[in-house]
Length: 302
Image 1: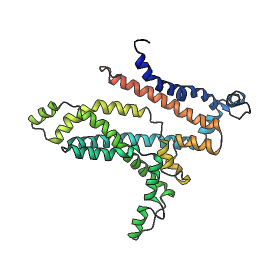
Image 2: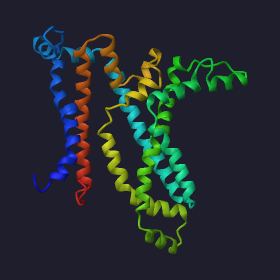
Image 3: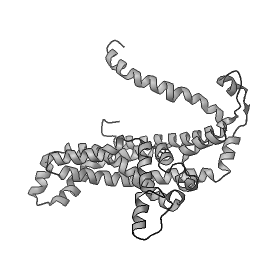
Image 4: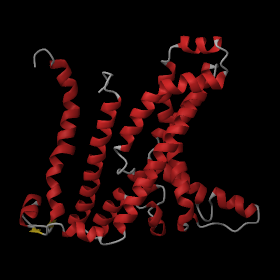
């Protein structure tokens, strides 16, 4: 304690945050196994006095199509995000690294990084300015070309692509900076040796840059797999503007729990959905961490 006082004080705020908002709320998972009813004596009394129902909340959840839809959407979207996000972020990082003009590099990097700081509320209105039925940019262009306007917020078929595009637009800049930093740390003598051997630019990227980035790409991908059952609430709620006709392609576990609690007030059922998400996510996190440890068994990173 005396030797590491400064370090412990630095860790204290984050430790307090995790205890208050991550560990203490775990006791609330008991609600998933109860028919929660409010009590005048407070929240704790409500939990204690509520009737035990076992797995009835889970049975109700999985007896409908909602469980399949929200699980399918959550997993498939995250798979696409992981694959395309990795490929595009690495490609953008390599292109930025190849720009010789450092001022242009900083300009492009800032422009790509800026969307990451925008809230999903702002992004939702930004997307609405393009997709609005009467004043949207896309429909105005369609009318100028003699085409009928499209009611985008009532057409589920378009939204899988839109969700992916918006996510990549907002996140690729941040991820590319991580890979760009790794590229900047590659020993320049490796490129010089490749040039002496007659390697062109593409061969240098394929035989030097990508192999050197492979450990980082593998680690970040495996860690992302551990969060494959977690969806970005703001993306799937704010961007589609909570349109009911789009639920088949935009409803994920996080939005389902929120809407269920808001509309029905059945805390037990929504807690069951959240617990289902957490258990599967926990299994994937432990599994991916095990893979990462095995992959890096000769390194001191983990």
